[in-house]
Length: 202
Image 1 (cartoon, rainbow, N blue to C red):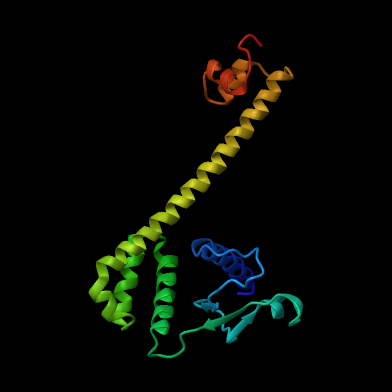
Image 2: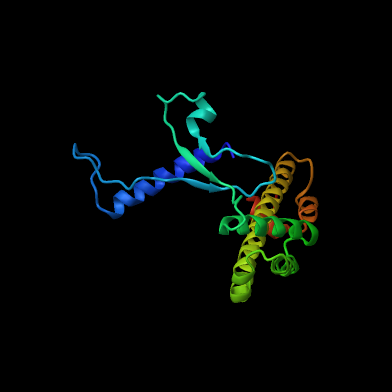
């Protein structure tokens, strides 16, 4: 939670920058620009029992020195049983548990909706929009999978690049032959030489 102040500050800067651009306001003149009053909120759904009503950037990093840059974030917990926020917090906790049990899967989503309906957590909304909720949650799940696959591909490409660089270095130093290097890289000698930038005659 402590790091959220910096995130909000960066987000506010980007948001105001877009706002000034979209409203065609010149902030390099003496005339003050018109800016909407900012309000920052954070819905806490974690396991720890935080009870701060407000987080302060200055308090977190500069011992509450008000002469420094500050940004205050109001923390919402959804403690009230009748609050929609409370229902959402419970929903996220159920989903977190199902994900631990069933992994990032459609089964975890369906099990979450089933338990939430049984426990009267966002029941009315889920019953009216169940297909939409499943679609949104599956889209998020697919996005996570895509990101994981992307990260895996990047790591694998980096690993392969490292292996090729090492093999190329060994060939240039005469430690191994092109044929041996190509076999180790699981490719033809021609392809290895092309990728490594070597002459097949080496």
